[in-house]
Structure formats: structure tokens, C-alpha cells
Image 1 (cartoon, rainbow, N blue to C red):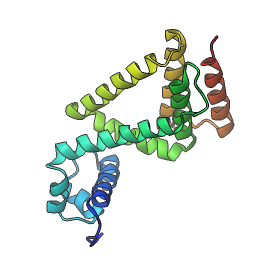
Image 2: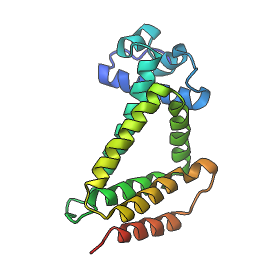
Image 3: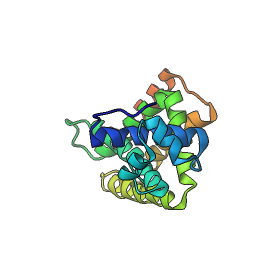
Image 4: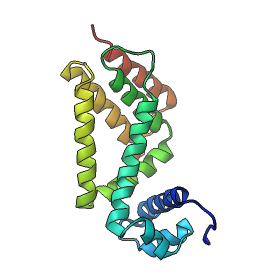
Length: 185
């Protein structure tokens, strides 16, 4: 792909992150930056203008992935829901929604597996996990309910990695059951 003239810096950065995700899924984290730049339609110098090197790019790729999930969860918060467990319910909805598209879920999981093998990037994931843990703990559900529901949502979102594609009806039923479990009191 040739250079895209006139693209603004945010769109260029987005194109680089999207290209990096594709390259890392296909070739792993050892793939050369030249290939990422080519697929993004920028020069290697253009890539290095936005990211100081491969470590910076991989770190940004992981942070972007995690922030996209966080945005999906926050978008799934029901504005009319003010009961304890509101965030956990949004987490369940976002996780199951992601699992409904098994091909995309497999791509996401493949990307995460590659990124998690890089120690500095894995640290980004651990920090994000700790942030989720604190936020979900503060959501007002009993610990055992929260732990069970979140673990089930995480498990179903990882299920496509092994080709265990549940039907939309099964996933919807599971989502509804998990949501019902969060309605305590």
C-alpha cells in the first residue's frame, strides 16, 4: 500500500496501530517495523515519528486494545441502571457481544497472546486487570457473585480461541443468566 497523502496525525496513528495488529496476529511480535509501515501506508520514518520503536508500538497497541474494550464496556452501561452491579452487567454485555463474532474474537485473542509474550506489554495487561478488579469490586456486588460472573464472562470471551463457538442463542441465554445473577437483594 502506498503512502496516503493528507492523512491527519490521528488517522495515521490509527492506521499504524491497525496495521501493527494485523502484522502481529500473522507474524508475531518479531515482525519487522518495515512491514507495519508498508501496510499502514507510511514510511518507516513516518512510523517512527508516531512511535519511537517497536517496544513503544507494541505498548501502544496493547493499551489501545485494552482501551477499546473499556470503551465497549462503558458504552454497554445502562443509563437507567443505578443498582449495585451496574458495571459488572456492562462488562458481561460487552464480553458476550464480543464473543458473538467468533472470527473477530479469535483475531483479538491471537493478538493478545502475542502481546502477552512481551514482558513490558504484559505489564500493561496486568495493570489493566488490576484497574478492572478495583472498579468491579467497587460496583457493589458480593465478592462471590462478582467473581463468578466476571470469570464466566471472561471464559466465554476466550472460548473462540479453541474453536468452541457457542451459538448466538446459547450466548444470549448465558448473558441473560449472568445478568440475572447480578440482581441480588
